[in-house]
Length: 254
Image (cartoon, rainbow, N blue to C red; front, side, top):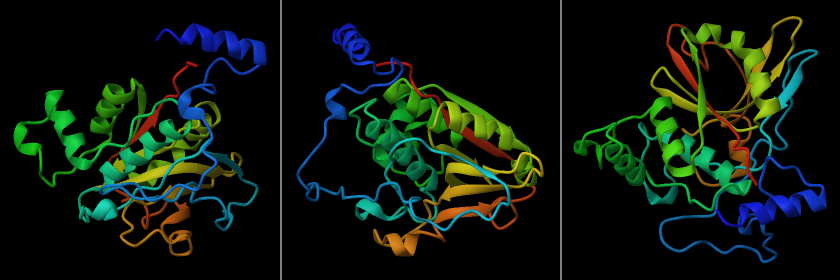
């Protein structure tokens, strides 16, 4: 991109970090109140974890997503994906994070656009387009790479009961990358926004953004049951299910 060198020079002159975009058009501030977009899109809630009740992990340290994101969930945009679209919604939330941080102007793709992309990449057959088939962490990684040029690391957990054993790696991710994580397994997908971890005792809570919510954009209804701190027990993770955790890597660019 021809403006990269100019932006790097300006970052240097202004003492700005050289590993994230701050002077792109997508970083511009809008001073007018946004109106509802045209078509089937809608205004979405941002940063729904702000103001939730605190984690009850004694002596724990919070490691959280860095920056803004939008909350995508079932039934938005007048589209019924109840029962099958949770991973698609988690992907849309992940892409919104990169958009909100100015890495891209790419809108979060629709379910059909995601399916078309996976077919074009050769991961799925053409019958996949328009279906209600689930996707998982690996497919999300293909889409992020193709649309945004974003690479991902995948953590694997052989059992939901072992999820707390990944606390150190998850803490490192939120400290160094700060991106939301997609958790896929047990036929469900969640978005992970952070953890509260006591390194000494091993106790760990997970800050879950749940795409299975089907209601309106009501923050009071969402905070707690649909966005909040959860124990890594059988109420959240299927104890004998295999899980993949998709960890997008922050691009080193201006």
